[in-house]
Amino acid sequence: MSWISAAGLTFILLSSGLLLAMSLLPRKSLPTFRDILAFTHLRRAIGLSVEDGTRLHLSLGRIDLLSPRSASALAALSLLRLIAEETAVSDRPPVATAGDSTLAILTQDTLRSAYQAASAEAQYEPASGRLTGLTPFSYVAGALFIPRDENISTNVFIGNFGVEVALLTEAAERENCLTLAATDNLPAQAILYATAQDPLIGEELYAAGAYIGFGWAHNASLQIQDILRWSIIILILGGAALKLVGLL
Amino acid sequence: MKGLFTTAIAIATGLVVLLGYFVHLPLLVNLRARFVQWTIILAGVAVLVGIYNLLSVHFGKIQRKQKNSIYSLFLIFALLLTLATGLVFGPDHTTTRLLFNSVVIPVETTLMALLAITLIYASIRLLRRRSDLMAIIFLISAMLVLLGTAPLPFGEIPLLGDWIRPWIIHVPAVAGGRGILLGVVLGTLTTGLRILFGADRPYGGK
Image 1 (cartoon, each protein chain N blue to C red):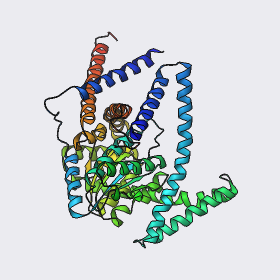
Image 2 (cartoon, rainbow over the protein chains, first blue to last red; image 1 turned 45 degrees about the vertical axis):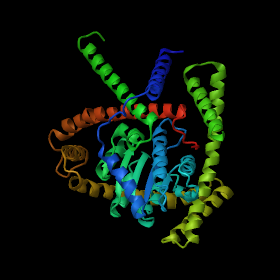
Image 3 (cartoon, each protein chain N blue to C red; image 1 turned 180 degrees about the horizontal axis):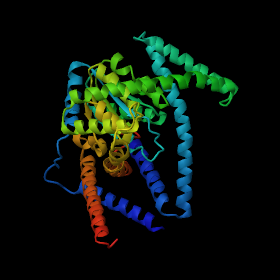
Image 4 (cartoon, each protein chain N blue to C red; image 1 turned 90 degrees about the horizontal axis):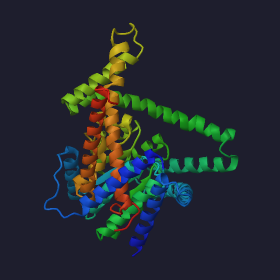
């Protein structure tokens, strides 16, 4: 095993140990996180959509699940599950769109599981989880009319998108919908900052589960992200200091 | 019981693939390669299921005579026509290429042009939506990079093209981009671990 592989494996084992320890150790109180306005708005929008009989549209992007960057789509699936469970009492289930067929199948499966968990199997509609297109623009073109035609009050764009996501946020804006957006793609991140009402930056995409209340594992993983981030910051600053004094 | 079984299979498969990346034992490496091959085959089948999903959603719209269902009819017609052309002539035939070159590419280029207009409009509205310091810095940086890149009728603005623009691109933009990517990597790691431990199960189950 090369030293890079050994370092990588050690890093993963360390993170796994931390996740297990922080999840399983008994705690007196729940961890507190800084306020992120987008999640406060989302919680309110979920409640309002149930009350006024409107739908939520969750767009999961078009990442191939075989690619190494598929975690954004998996985080989006967690959020979809939570939204579906919370809106299970509504007669207008959320709509989820994907630009990859594997992801579209997983959205259907996630919706079905959420309704089963909420004992509302009758609410499940297979057409709520949709593939709208397989290329960037065909995906956008397929999802473009959903805010207008399906009585949508909130659009959540979370996953891997390209710059074409601006067409989706613009369509949502025209219908006066709330738009919450997060992506792991840098050019799309800049676009979403300019076009979405509530943009999430960088790793905030992966914090949705902890903020919306998905449970212990999400809280623990968010705390681990913080610990690892500070470790990296210290390493970078330490490396820069050593370089400055000529020891590196 | 079924949920436990699928979770156990998913965790075991995930562990084998993960270990196969780091520990180069022939058994692990071969198993990892075999699992990845199976996944590629399943992803191929998933495309067919996805197309069925697309067709059923649009057939449903037509049946319910939903608003704008004429577009669904057009989509189904175009999908079947393209599929038939591809099956009869093959993907490299002139007819199939003609379909792509004269329909798909012009339509996507049109959407790209619309996107350019949408972005200009969005940047104008940005300050109306968020008039904080970050929004102002964002707009000024975008404007400086644009002015430093675009060919201007009166020639280059002094300092902008050869000093300010390269500095913005190579220092703050790269630093910010790397910061975001580090955050994304950490998020990816913890999301992967949650799935590996079965805390998140995107493959279904309660």
